Image (cartoon, rainbow, N blue to C red):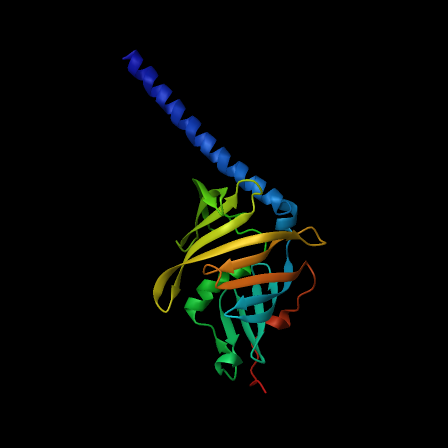
Length: 244
């Protein structure tokens, strides 16, 4: 009986060692990611954010501005075909005003659009930071390759049960790719986002200056990003009047 007992103990110790190493490996990777993004103090200290840039799609260059209050409210405003268009959301709902689509006054955002956009409320600097408090689960799947470079593949499950994958470059620990499933016209489709040209602003916050979606069909370039400057609550209030 003793050999069996000792063998059981040995197997248990081996399982515990593997589990411990795996957990430490994920923790170590995430800590290096946080450090690469400016450090935990910077990430956790984000209260507001303002971004200016352009979106390149179908041969058009569309200027945009974005204001955010971390995990509270977000306003995205973009100019196209001589019109100013707005999308706004908070934790519970959103509204849109799209004159480019013939919309004469602001309307409530439909649930599908709201669910697709509400992740934009998190402006902390990394969707992986403090993930448990956000109701997410993160697991280290293993290693993969992105643009010919090794990357850590992380499985991210939201509190709603949505599953996506985040790839961290094994050298820089920046997020270089994200895979998510989204509903487009009622059909589930895989959305691939690529992130590059990481920059640091004068306040010490790190961000990807270039991101692409749909295999390069749409590219977003950030020209300016400021953090913790005043952002008026009035930006997020749904107006009642028609656009002139």
